[in-house]
Image 1 (cartoon, helix red, strand yellow):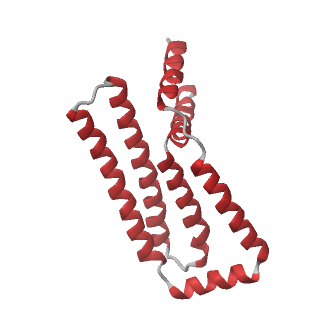
Image 2: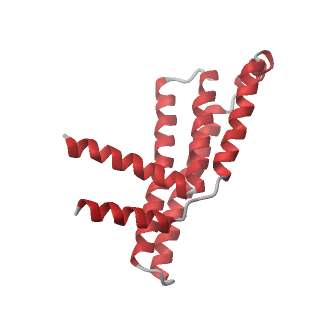
Length: 166
């Protein structure tokens, strides 16, 4: 059971590392935050909500896999090799395809002028909610723009963890 629980800690650590080193991961989390927040204004079926949850999960998973592939290649070689570049580009391309797909899903499910009017009215009539929306936007801009940790620092940390376990 202890190993099982540890695996969740490693997974959370992996996501935290991605957030610390990858600006795109921060952008994906920001987009997910607002999608989940604005979903309440739409009359979505359970199937539509499921599609949204799966899409968010897939975008974040693709970004994490892209980061893992890039880190593994950087760990193997520092030289510029065509196959290494192809692997990194293909992983980034897969992430881009998933992100564009997410945008298409979002447009399909959220493009509703009636809901836009409801959202507008809600924020016009609720100054506190409008202020919180503005604050959240500023906080997300700061989070996205924070300096990124160097992935080489993460490699040093991970090597120390491996040495401790052995």
